[in-house]
Image (tube, rainbow, N blue to C red; front, side, top):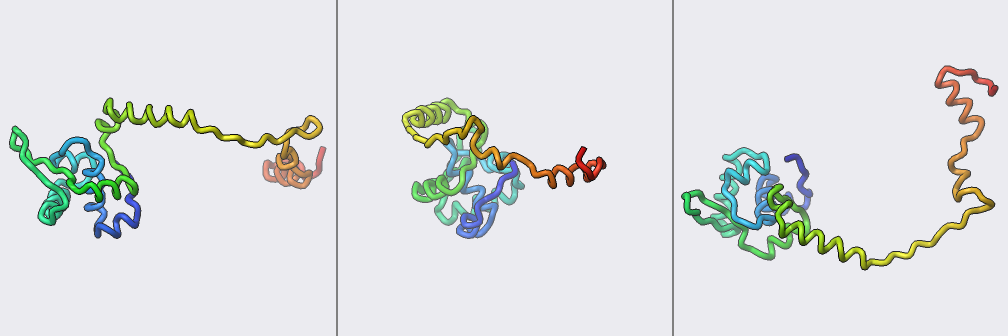
Length: 156
């Protein structure tokens, strides 16, 4: 997954890997394993687990073991989550296409139909479209183009 982290977000968190991991955790609806985070962000597993360990030690994220014994991580700070949501969004395809997210996007799209925008119309002048002069080439330009194409310099 090739994407760019905003420079201000990277500066706040000190490293691009940490910013990506936090951005990914901020957008998740369910806790994820370090391996799943690594796979979805296309970052080495050891780098991801190193950042997860630091973040967990600092109390920024929480973890718990699932029924199979896999350690799953999630972001527990709502202020940090909202900051990351405003500045970057990293979602796995499963979350993006989940029924809840699709319903949310459709609802927001329906809200846009209520927005009314009145744009002034530009009247046509003497049957010619507005700004027609901008699309006409001068004879000098035609000669230059013929010269480039290998045609005659003189108009025919």
